[in-house]
Amino acid sequence: MKRIFITGATGFLGQAIVKNLLENNYDIVGLARNETSAAILENLGATAHIGSLQDVDSILAGIKEADAVIHTAFNHDFTTFKQNCEDDRHLIQAMGKALNHTSRPLIVTSGAWAMRELNSEQIPRAASDEAALACYEKGTNCMVVGLPQVHNTHKFGLISPMLEIAQSKQVSAYIENTNNQWAAVHLSDAADLYRLVLEKGESGHKYLAVGEENIPFKTIMQTIGDRLNIPTRAIAKEQAQDYFGHFAHFAELSLNASGEESKKALGWEPKGASLLDDISNAVLS
Image 1 (cartoon, rainbow, N blue to C red):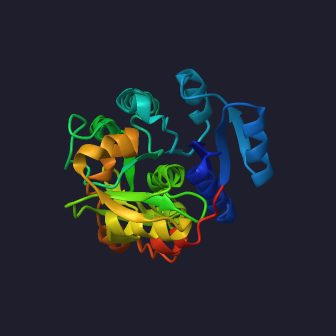
Image 2: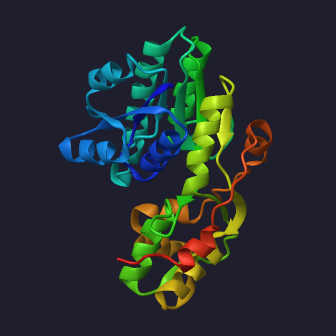
Image 3: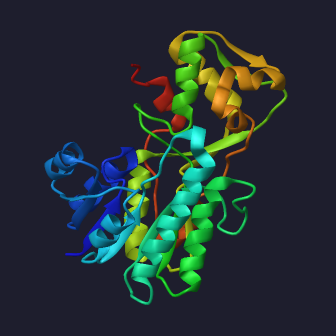
């Protein structure tokens, strides 16, 4: 039985990965910030390791006895997004150094784009890709999982705050004259991909966890409007900041990608519900 150390183990994605790996007879040690988080992991059947992203030494202590590391933790405070991405870079570099010249895999989480396609000056989140690539080039068995919008009926990645904004403003909006498209993956399918990367992944590669692609952002917002029973309408680009706030930039981006290479390389077969179906059946607070 392999022992896997997971950061972000009590998060939305992390818990799904923990459950998937436990079901496949892995021994899981999860990073927990406090006793409450530790209890969540222990109830799942995992072992808790107390530490935090701000305490790198606590994380390095956690990976000492691990056969592999899956890094999913990330600070999702978008008011400090760029700094959060740089903090992630430094943590990945520290973990990579600890695992350097061993066969123990380090699986890093980033966004769903090609590993060398974008840099952190263009998209700050690419700092994680750059750090992983640097670790690989220095001799770490490092791989990356690129995530689109991960969803079930409770959460939808960046779409969750879009839904909250629409609910607050009582109108679901998209920017006029934009044709941006997004990709998505069901939570259970994403967790399954992490396991397959652990078992079959090739060092230095990035695997995109895209279960479906080419979903128009306009259609996403229309589906949100239908779920909330509120009007959907186009707004001018100049109104985007006022409506979307910190998420205005994302509302006009094409966050699209393909998971075909991951399916071919790993035998991954996404089976979960579609993004639009999950939004249509969203559990509202």
